[in-house]
Length: 205
Ligand SMILES: Nc1nc2c(ncn2[C@@H]2O[C@H](COP(=O)(O)OP(=O)(O)OP(=O)(O)O)[C@@H](O)[C@H]2O)c(=O)[nH]1
Ligand SMILES: [Mg+2]
Image 1 (tube, protein in one colour):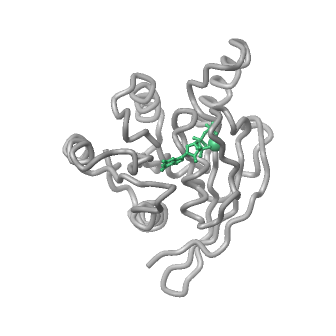
Image 2 (cartoon, rainbow, N blue to C red):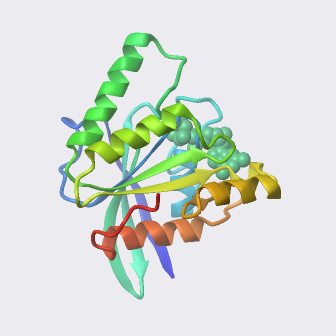
């Protein structure tokens, strides 16, 4: 079993230029505003309030870095989690929105320490245009040493029939609930293995 034994906030940045030195492998969490990125980080780390979450979309406005220590078979592994502002948040001014989007895209393309892109999608809305375009952007720009992992959040909001249909459409994705803590361990295992063990294996999409 893999566990996160240490998780601490490191710093915030607005883009590549004021980010930490890129000396540690990073897992970035991205997706639409309010999809549950910050809550997912807290669930993975089993640490409430580590990343600030809120029912108001647009809570995370900066790029937030967390120092993470995994423990697997008595061995420690070091990484960083990166909580990003959400895409597609409407209630900010247009110029601010464009600047965010540009900064974020620039960060995803230029930040050399990113190893894993964890793309989060809302289990209730699996086919949104904005998620497809983010996925396109990632696939087009990702380097050979980078992977994309797709995870659906808010699985607790689906009934059995809806869950069955989602699994049929996305057979290799993981469906988690941050509030009910379901399949968090499965997601953690996938992230850990992709980060440290799988070499250049395929994305889960
Ligand atoms: N029912 C349910 N609610 C969730 C889940 N994950 C997150 N939420 C709720 O969704 C809201 C948004 O969660 P955040 O973690 O702040 O979302 P975010 O993607 O970080 O949002 P931004 O920082 O605005 O981009 C909060 O009210 C959470 O409690 C989940 O798996 N199930
Ligand atoms: Mg957030």
